[in-house]
Image 1: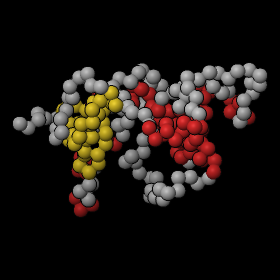
Image 2: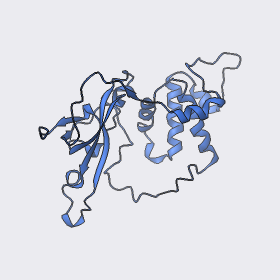
Image 3: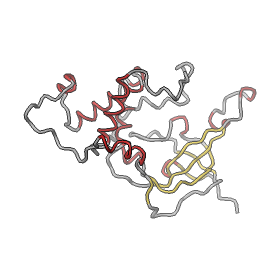
Image 4: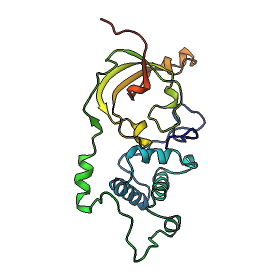
Length: 233
């Protein structure tokens, strides 16, 4: 999905004008019965291997009406897009809510998740850790700066953290690189770090009396970072 016209509507961190965040009980994951079905259908189709998790995230964040949709409306809209793009369902079938190819075999998929497998598969999850083939470029305690440019494709580096200074707090090993994975360019495993940013580095114009001495930490792949200074010792 990499192209110069790539636009994400989900990168909202640091933006103003959206009002207060309404916290909801974690014990109530669904607001309506259809939302549970939306989750089930999305997971089942993801298990077919027709796309990867980063491609599904890219499909969701580029929905033009992203900000007007609820959480599971976004999931269903992105699922419809993925199904249509891969020829698994036509626009007419999506509108009808059923297959219109009576008597004809459905387009084959790589895998089918049986109901009896769901609990085991979800409990096991899918590891994105890979065996390192290079040395890590950064170490714990090192000062780094995030890249400033906005890439023309899906990325896990939030916009409000681009071009900012932080420090490496943890090295996680090598993991599938979401940016490449979302574009269908393979896993391209990269070193992954937890990087912490002080409040002053993120919002330098905030008056001192309004600061709360907070910090923000994210997991950042190595291509997101560049060194700022030699490591002590």
